[in-house]
Length: 253
Image (cartoon, rainbow, N blue to C red):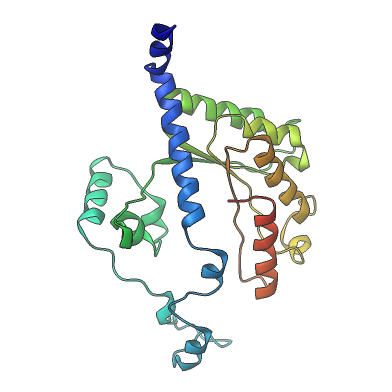
């Protein structure tokens, strides 16, 4: 009995599964101890009262084409340091492109350099995206799930995120993805509830998106669920906050 248990524990498959589960728990821990909702609403280093003292322009007038300067609360320091340079050199050596650099992410110095805590958070992930495939009975869910399984078969340590459609609210399709072995289930809510009929396809509903994200987490509690929202379409601050609250209520990480 002891010999059998020892063989199981030392098997590569067990070790890989254990490593993946441990990494997920580490990410969940970082999320729980990271910035709260209020930190995103208001940067603690800058109060709204400080905005009034800013002499620069925050908005271009009609007909103006000159580029505006960033106000101080949106500026970050130029990334430097040993950790940052090390990761950058490794990526160049491996001939890898990153969304961090391509999108000119302002937080790249914090992630790659380790920030104030000295912990680098650059992660190798595979992100699969999909357009709506309403022409297929299962919305393409089986194809996405099979792709995830093949990636994990090649290397189970690779983190996989799937940005998927709502599958017309078909929970069986959601379950197919949720149990495919992926690590992050992503579906975008896109905009606030009031603007949804004008921004999204009429077949996509705000509440339907919430139900899809909720069901994915209920069907597989180990998943990290994720969504994104576009800003600048006429929504109010209160509507944005309500959207964030709605998402947290259904367990979106």
